[in-house]
Length: 127
Image (cartoon, rainbow, N blue to C red; front, side, top):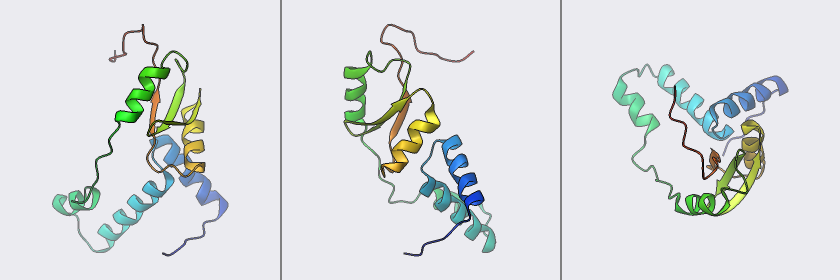
C-alpha cells in the first residue's frame, strides 16, 4: 500500500470536506483518485463512471443492530447526533462534524450517523 504525505493545509481542507459530506476521509480520497484516473484516461461515458462508483462487489451493510440500539436509547440521546457501529455507540454530541471526527479517530469506517428524534415527536418531512 502506498502512503501519501499531505501538507497541513491540504489535509485540513480534505478533513473539512469529508465532514461536510459526512463521509470517512478515506472514502473522499478514494473517490478523488478514481475521478482523477477517469479524467486522465479520457473516460467520460456514464457507464464508465457508474462502474467506478458502484463496483459489483459492493457489500450492503446490515443496520439492524443500529436500529435496535436507537429504539432502546432514543429517550437518552434525544436531540443529539450519534455515531453507531453495530450495537455500539461510537460517539455522540450536538455537532455532527465532531461526532463524525470522533468516529474516524476511532477507526470506524462506515458508522451510522443520525440525529436522534424524541419518540413522541413527529418526523420532519420538509417544508
